[in-house]
Length: 156
Image (cartoon, rainbow, N blue to C red; front, side, top):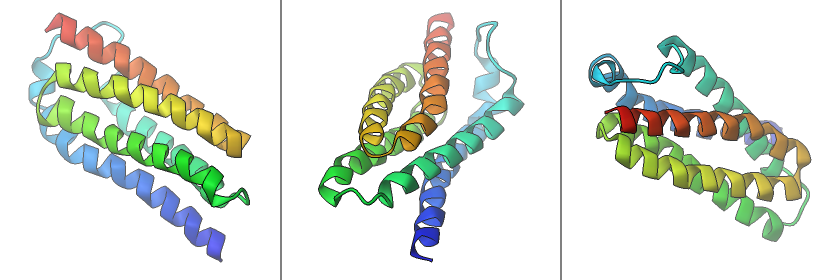
């Protein structure tokens, strides 16, 4: 039962980051974002919500695996702290890009986010290989999002 509660908390924490980000995204995606010049490789808008919901779920499972690991807390704590920082920056990106309508600030945030995701993956791999692998789709998507963010900045 204890692990089930940890699992639910891990999923909810990650989904909350997405919900916070969506408050800022929803307001701008049908107004300001439509006015931007975007590169030809921009995915359709409908793809973003299911992609992020899936990624937040994978992140939650990865967090759960590390949190519930039998490794000493001293070993798990740095990876969990990194995870928390990257999750904060994940939500901050939506605020920067969509809320403040700033592709430049968004780019700065997403570059730091990418670095923290990489460090989190490395930390998670030391505790649970499965947890590390579960974050690979996330860093790939954020890599693509970084290129998209840069292209939007350049085109506008």
